[in-house]
Structure formats: structure tokens, C-alpha cells
Amino acid sequence: MSTPRREPRRIPVPGDVSRVPEIRDEWLRHALSTEPAERGTAEAVISELYALAGQSPPEFVRVSSPAAAVALIPPARTLSLGGDLPVEGRIATLVTSLRERLDQYIGAWRNRYRQPDPPRDGASVREFLNNGVAPALRRTIRDSVAGALRGELATSSGLHWYGQQDAYWVAHYDLHQRVDGVRFAADDVAQLDLWATLARSCGWWWPRENVCVVADRPLVVRTEQLPSDYGEARLHNGNGPALAFPDGWTVHAWHGTRVPPWVIDAPTADRITGERNVEVRRCAIEHVGWTAFIEDAGLRLLARADDPGNPGSELLLYDAWPEPWRTPARWLLAVNGSVERDGTRRRYGLRVPAGFDHPLDAAGWTYGLSGAQYAQLSRRT
Image (tube, rainbow, N blue to C red; front, side, top):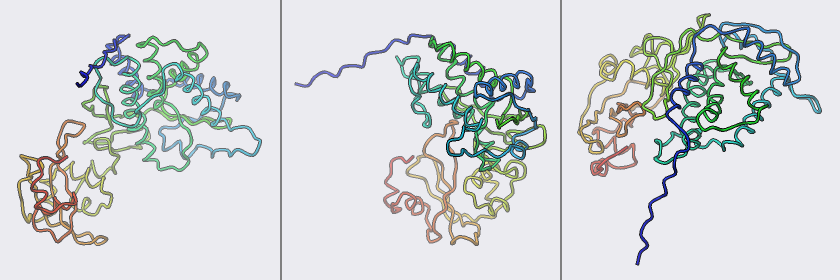
């Protein structure tokens, strides 16, 4: 006799998550702010952090963008045997130690790098914040915005930099205090308040011995909202830079992917077909649209067929444009079987060997199948 399946016990939510969107959006506004920096406040708080690191207040150098800062940041001082940590290392240790102590109250963040599941009925507030809201804030603020800045700078200095991007982790602990009712140690709250004040009052800054380089906030920040239960967004602007700074330095992004300015400002068939980076090429084609690109590039349609793995969609096989650095090929145009994070189904092109004359054979090849086997699929993803 089998044992009846027992339904999982529902865990009552001990707090009020209805306040989460308000507090989360408050910190997103700080992280994406284009308001002038509060210089006096920022310099006073940075001086306090220098004091906690055992250093006198630094001289402040103001610049108009992170790009301008990179040219001025003194090289990091290497640690000699038995020597003291440089100030940037001591401040980094302050942050790491603070967050480790705070995590002892709320548990380790899980699933930081994967897409979170939808909110679960009966989930605790702590689980909701740690596994849902925190990863979404990280991807929006640190990975999308600050990540695009780092990528555009392409600097190997890789040294710690702080500022608006810290809003993602400051918000996490602030939410635990204001929503989950967590009480941290008084000294830790005082230090967390310093980082919170900085995230609210300035752009990005780089600490060094006796000097601190501080960049202005951007003049433009353009994002798009994702259909997320946790308010996630990503950099995107189809009509200009996604980030722009007072000195004219810009970063362009297409649905979260950092791209060269021409992809947004002047995408042409010649530029697209000459682009070797697959992701950049994909973004440029999506921007102009596959129909317009195919026409402008003069691609010749060889064959078309209904897609058995994606009912209601067609597979289109085209001659590819010549790529001198690669073997001859053809392009299979298909519609994604899965819904994108923005709720749409993306149309995309796959490079396939030039020997294929039928779309089903080409589609099967991408899955390691024959055309006849692919024709038997009921649904692909």
C-alpha cells in the first residue's frame, strides 16, 4: 500500500513584503541617478572611510567621467613582504568584513548569478530578499550598468572602485532592516550608513594613498524594464547612448549588450557584414530588423519551410554574405522557440554549412540531427 503524498507545509511570511518595491526603487533611483553629486557630503564620508582604514583624509581630484579617472588614478602599490596593505586594500577589507558580518544575521546570498524563480507561496521574507530581490539588484546595478562601464574602459588595472554601484548591496541590507526587521550590531550599522550615504551622494570613486579620484555622475542613464517579479532592468537605448557623461564619454547598449556606437547611430549592411563579433552583429541586425538587413545586404532566399519544432513559424535559408576570413556558408533564419526575458520571441540567424539546400536539413544540423529527424520534433527551445 502506497503512502499518501503529503503536501508541503506552508510557511507563513513573517513580514510585509509590500514595502519591498518602494524601498528597492528608492535605491535604484540612487544607483541610476543623473543628479549632480553632493561633493561635500561625499568627500566627508570618504574621509571617514580613510580614517577607518588608518589613513589621513586624501586630496580629492574631481573628473567628469570614469574614462577621465582611469588616466589619473595612480598605479596600485604592490604589497611588499611584511609591509602594510595599501589604502585601497584596507578599504576593500573593510567592505568585505562588513558584509561577512552582516551576512551572519541574514544568511548567505544564494543564486546570485542565476535567474531567480518567481516568488513562492509561503516563502519567508528572508528567502524572498536573498534569492529574488538581491540577485535582481545585482544584475541591474553592478552587472548591467557598472559592468558596461568596466567593459568600455577595458582597463587591466581592475582595482577596486566604489560609488553608485554599491547601491545594490547596500539596498540588500537596508531591505533586511526595514522589511525583515533584522537588527545588526550598532557599529556595523554605522559603517553601513557611511556606504549608504556615498551611494546616495556621488558617482564612482577610486581610493589611493593620499589621493582619491572621484567621477561625476552621468548625465544620461537609459534602461529598459524586464518582466521580472523583482523589478530588474538592463541598459538599453535604441536612439543614442545608454550612458553619457559631462565630458562627452558615452557607452551604448542594446537590450543589455554593450555595443559600438555605430550599432545604434548608423547601422548599415556593410558594417554589419564586416563585423566579426557575433553578439555585436546580432544586435545591429536586430536594430535595423532582419527584413531590412536582408534587403540591404542583398541576401538571396534559397528555400523556406514550416518549422516543425516551432509551430506557426517559418525557417528561411539564405545565401550568406562573403566572409574572406571564414569558409563559405549559408544563413538559416528562425524564430526562437522560447520566450525571451522581455516577453518576446527573438528572430535570429544561424550560420550553417554552404552544402545545405533545404531549411530542415540546416535546422537539423544545428541540433546534430538529420532533416528527417528534425521534421519529427514536436517542440524545440
